[in-house]
Image (cartoon, helix red, strand yellow):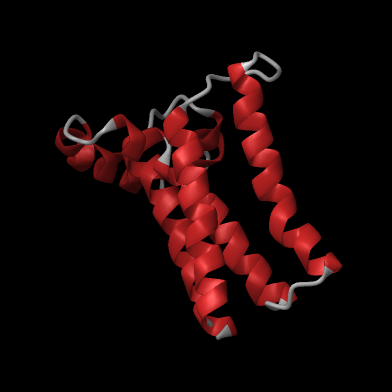
Length: 139
């Protein structure tokens, strides 16, 4: 079971990373390290091949789905590291990041934090959390 959680975490992490890598603007901070790597030419060529597809993708795919995937990845990794028992220590690890993320996103709605509130972010955070949580309940 632990290996399945690790594989699910890696898959979610790579999926979110790939959306950023192939479809998001290269002006975001995320690409600073990439510009100094040996793979920059290969990545730029792949990005050019994906350019026609980018205009056909919904904005939630580009901007909200990666967030949900990364939360999903975090949860799977925590379950694989901490185990699946519900106790105080594990619950702090399981729920701290999801609660902080939701608080931050809702805080953007009330201008408590920088950024733009997006209902799709909330939806994908919730889906990412529930997907992992339901997997935990069934295994």
